Length: 355
Image (cartoon, rainbow, N blue to C red; front, side, top):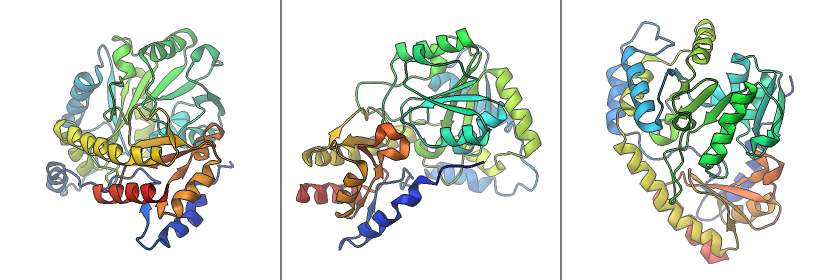
């Protein structure tokens, strides 16, 4: 099995260039949280450290209740559905085609690289597509991502309904990666595919992560919600494979799902940072596209993405070239908002001074 080179390795020379800046590097290339884990979540983790026994793959009864309540209240899920905790969402994205024994996998043509990697691990046929399912071939599994990483695009209700209709007509499983659902940046409000399913969740799965919404990237905590039969199948394989979320993490996940205030506070932090950095990029000739939700600014100066990356690296700022996410992103860059208020302001100042 031949996998693509890990994309971020190619950024190393630009990272070195950025580190030579007199004021140091501002790394906006990776969406890793920098704000504190909320104290009540830390306390929950600490309170559950004396757990010598094996954790339940299915999740503790308290966690299962929290996941179901959250899916109903926050996602709008109705009808028959099940829930399952996972060891972060990236491992699920990478392994879902294998767990489902998929032979063909559809994924967005501008997308998080792990969708392709997951198809390759499963030895499935990977198929890049636009959002319009009227042009999709028949497939076993189709990934959609709204809000999108890297573009921040929110798919409309009509687009998501068309995806559901594609599933109903073809029998394809839809995996909806909704990890950035909590971070809208304007009047456009993203919705879960499970809300639009109106209680018929057959062949529909929604993937959610605690990494961004609760700053728990270091904990590796996520969940999958949807079709009960599919989740039972996934759960059975994960039980055999020992893919269990550690007990202290399950406790932290339980309390994190029971509070939305900390999520709103974090969303406000990212929105504040966006309002500082986006105008600076625009003043330097970058056109911001989509970026309606999420933690990134997707922008272009209609030049090769590596040229834009180099221009920023000369200012001590490290961004991600759009071609990491597919050839369609070759003239774009992704700039993360996952840095401190101070560093985001510093980055904006450097850009404004250099334009």
